[in-house]
Length: 314
Image 1 (cartoon, helix red, strand yellow):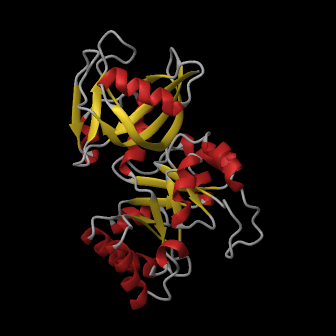
Image 2: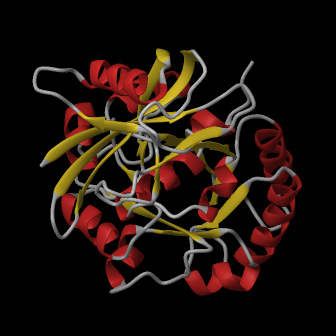
Image 3: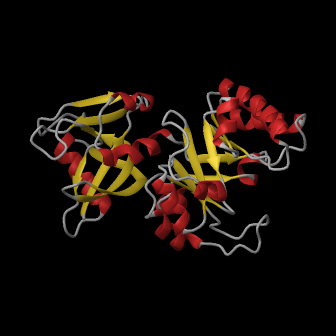
């Protein structure tokens, strides 16, 4: 397997740098995130710094892991080790004759990428925090919606509505109210429900619990909507790969008060399982905002949480 390092490079305006592969190269003519092969004896940060200097003439100052994903083409297998480059020196240009272009994250769909880049694009477009709501007391729980709006005013831009104790009718009513709030703050709302309910309410996608995840033989919604899944085992991750989920939540990383009997994965096992996923992975279970850097270091997109993201922070 060829080990390839790539950089998702951001400028001060929040745009991302893309490079167009030369026609004579593998996957020639398609756009990519700049990078290249790791040489023997190089660490990934060393390879990233060297490749971006050779290809673009920039010096990396600050970068952190974004996603690692393996992909098999008919003629070769690659392991893509992708880092988010947030600070650099120089004026990037195509030193090898390649075309380069800046674009906004939401415009990435306008470019043609190699198939291996699909999970990277998903990771670029997802935040580092995934808010899972606690159970609303009822469909008229004012405190619930006040708190949801406060979270949306803060750092939450990806939300899962979790309300297992409500009837389907009351759940849809709550989902409609939550969707109005999320739309107001340009946040994405996923329903912890069936895909049919998500389509009925008009949310941005669905979060499949592990039982629902295992029930499907193919992706249950189009690619214009998000599909997330709850995973705890390798079997469930492999199923998420088969139905092409956009991201998964892997838990429990630590022992939790809500599921005290569930054995925790720990960070090492979490990393091993994340390596098998073909999409971004959020760490769940005893997580706090302080755990975000540790989650990145262990292959995660970021953290998912209820209490740590819902409770007011001083």
